[in-house]
Image 1 (spheres, rainbow, N blue to C red):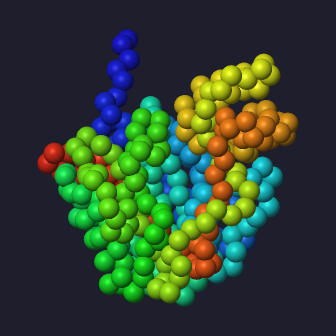
Image 2: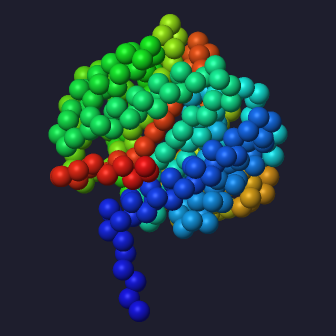
Image 3: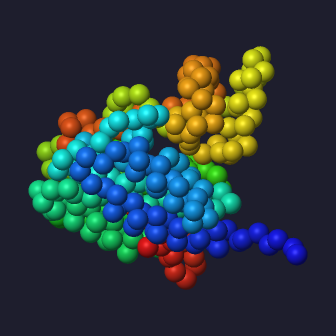
Length: 301
């Protein structure tokens, strides 16, 4: 029996369908005092169980954390009482990625912010069309957020997706910006406005030790064991991000020491947690789209 590889569109759509199901299940696990480690592991298990693979570690970021918090090995961190929680997950099928995020407010005081973030994404998706410039699109997103009484974060953006590439060289801004890029047919993009209250700095800074890594170089390594691990990381993740806890599961706690050495050598890149500079709470919603000549497919909806 011959095995037929999926077309890129089929793979994008399947990844999106899995991501939609997984994020809906994940939302039910966001509760006060829940362990973030358990949430991340269950979400990632669900991705695999539904026939996909994680495109990056499950992110569970709270309050002023905008993105990139994933559980460390043996993490004891919990969901805070009354928190504003961002659940961001990535799924890939044969390298074709679906990226989706949702914000859950565990207190009614977040209702307006959460609703504004949801409406800003909904409006942004309605504006996308082939050939639309990113500059014009960013203006649409910025204006919508402001009309609702909020502002988009200046240095966080959506991004074009590629096979096994989460950020494929083009950022999709959430503000007006000078760029010659535009939405192109047959390309996939993650659309993700991040918003905060007016008066916030509305920029993010890196803070805290990262638990997310990515193989970024193939420099020659004299240490044979380290070189073997680099090859295994490439074989398994193909340049996509991975979690430090995945390394512990694979290589034991000694794997963390090797990971630190690879970071120092510039072979592995580490991602810090992104925090709003004035500690303003951040809300985010995200969908993945595939541009067709006659329509826009929201793969994660």
